[in-house]
Amino acid sequence: MTDEQSVERERRITSVLKSTVIGRRHVNRIVTWSDVIRLRFSKRVLVRSTIVLLAVFLVPFVASRIMSPWRRVSIHSSSQQDARADGRLPTTVRVACFNIAHGRGTAISNWDGGDYQDRISRLDQIAALLREVDADIVVLNEVDFDASWSYHTNQARFLANKSGYSHWVEQRNLDFRFMFWTWRFGNAVLSRYEITDAQLVDLPSFSVLETLLAGKKRSVLCDIDVDGLPLRIVAAHLSHRSESLRVLSADIITSIVRESTTPTILAGDMNSTPVDFPGATTDENGNNAIETFDESGYFLREPSRLGVGKDDFTYHSNDPRSVIDWILVPAKWDYAEHNVSRTVLSDHRLVYADVVPTDLQ
Image 1 (cartoon, rainbow, N blue to C red):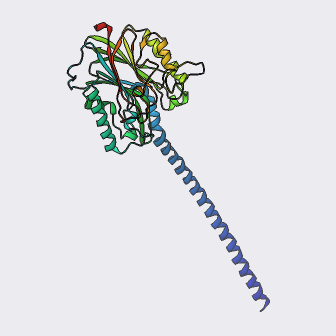
Image 2: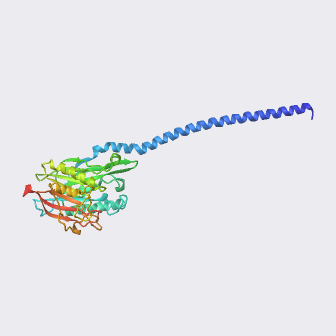
Image 3: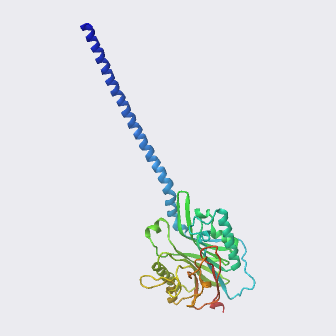
């Protein structure tokens, strides 16, 4: 190989190497810009996806909580005729209270209790029981107005229509929506007589955060015209978590009752029983909610005797061992009859009483 050929060969090799390096740099430059564009696009998609997900999660929830104060109490009526059983003493008013446990029966979880048909069948049976008891006024606890676990059935309206009650009140304790699920339930009052007014009774909260995010147990006060007799019904479901909260709630309810000149009946699941009854609890000061009502001097209760028996127990319906569901009447009134139904349509038993207003004696 001549010198000229060697020089030419080296020149070509150098040219190829330069071309390869430039090409690699160009390729690297293209890959780098492509990665940047792809990364920026991915970030935009991620941000937009996050916004969409937050909207799906939070908008229904926030909207439901904002609207909840305006939906806490509502009065309803239907066009059906009132029906009363024959032979009822005209000088008595029959009042019933029943914690229906969201229509789940004796199941532990609210998500249990069967499918839609099972739930409707159970509500039909509860309606049949209410027709049999034939109370003038019924207080219901743990009533669903629009809850996912009970297939969005308004149980207050269902039971009012099926049981023959022309008037009812819905009072929401919890009211919120999260994505596609809703939790709206509380207390209800069914009446054969016109409900002229209904007011929320605010009770102490177990947790401020819980109250803000979901709601809390409250009560409702209803004014009812019973054949010309003005009557007030307080439908209550006191806290199941703390006797101290129940005592505070009892103080609030008692103070409201004392300020009224209208005779008032208090009914519902109090989650409390007197200290000399089985299963009783007290707060840190030795106070008890039912005894707080007793000490107010306003209410009369049944059972009142020390020898309370199993037939008086209201919870748990499968094996009742305590009295926590009550119908308390004005102290000047009297009980003509007091009964506990042996139903297992809920984990509570239904309580009903014929009470004698002194105004009619």
